[in-house]
Image (cartoon, rainbow, N blue to C red):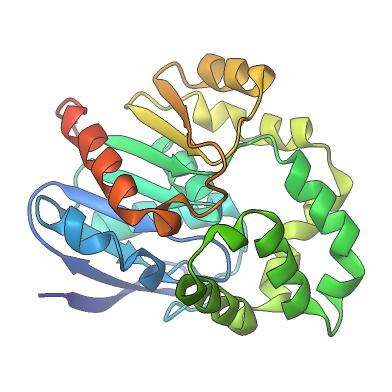
Length: 267
């Protein structure tokens, strides 16, 4: 049975969530413009063995806006959600923007493990795309530009049903929110962006799985392993950005294997 609710944050915002199953807690965090239903295909499989909590990020789904629109503020909100739901040292799984959020959260409060789904911290390709498409992203062509970005990062690997679903997410996406989040990228290099998050990532002590749909290169592999010594990097070459949607069975099987191997965490 799925249980739903709203959590009132200290800053006045509200986070919508649902949960299923019982046992150790697993929190799922979706990517930009999407919502918690993006995890529908894998949630029942995980919920057989875990208490699976799915949230809508601020300005997404049923959640309200927050005074700050950045990944660190979202990580603090995630910590508050975990505390309100009494989730001691949960496993954290995030895709895309959610991958950044769960990684930063694991640097600020105890986590049992982290699975970062296709969100490298060297953002060179994303920066190039945003710069190229900036006029359309800021104007009436926002939705079409977002769909083009989706297709250029692996959207065509998805089934027609899932592709249509992701297009609907982007049609509902908040242009003001997306651009407030991405505008800083226009003025920075991917290495400077990585340097901003590096101090928090270096605080991660739990097992960390970076699942990528493309080879990130030796420089990034070396940087991530230096920054997060517990990191395992796994590349599903050619699967694109939505690994959990292209092959949900493979994804759920690998994640469950990783979660079961994680040592007991202490809050």
